[in-house]
Image (tube, rainbow, N blue to C red):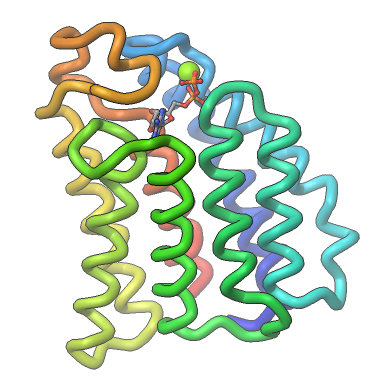
Amino acid sequence: MKSDRIPEVLTAMSRKISEKKDFLTDLDNAIGDGDHGINMARGFAAVESRLPEFEGKDIGYILKTTGMTLVSVVAGSAGPLYGTAFMKAGMVMNGKNEMTADDFIECLNAAIDGVMMRGKAVQGEKTMLDAMIPARDAIVSAVKDGRNFPEAVKAGVEAAREGVEYTKTIIATKGRAAYVGERSLGHQDPGATSFTYLLETISEAL
Ligand code: ADP
Ligand code: MG
């Protein structure tokens, strides 16, 4: 995927998030404070407003600016967490104008490390990591099996969806949902869900 297509993907992410805004907010209402959809929609609307600046810029610049925008405009943990994820991916793509499947895996690795560091979380705590890590693992194994970039990301989307289902079966131990304890059982994690939407958009673009 070339750098000139990234703004198109960010626009599609913004559209998808705005379509799913109410649903994400409902999910967060059940186990948190009901702002995840609002937070994500505000963040991606701000990213969309910066798209003209991205003309002619490399992928690293675009992803880093996206991350900084999310950190600065989003209240709530999703802003710093997704912001860190995009900034870390931006560092991987520094000066690059094309993203291969291997680059994408490196971006996901950096994004996961960033979220784990920033959120002090690991897999199995009912967070976005429960979609991100299985998605990354599925993409790595698809690429190893010789599948191309679009096919690999499609496998990643399937794994992220399964990750979202898995979050229904576990108790939250990080973020606001940790306060509701056992009552978080049976509910899917909002952040794992929004990550799945973002990955779906990338898959659709590929
Ligand atoms: P807030 O929790 O501040 O209201 P949001 O509602 O926008 O922020 O985001 C909630 C989502 O953020 C959760 O569903 C979860 O996926 C993710 N999250 C919260 N805390 C953490 C953490 N410490 N590590 C990783 N992800 C987290
Ligand atoms: Mg919230």
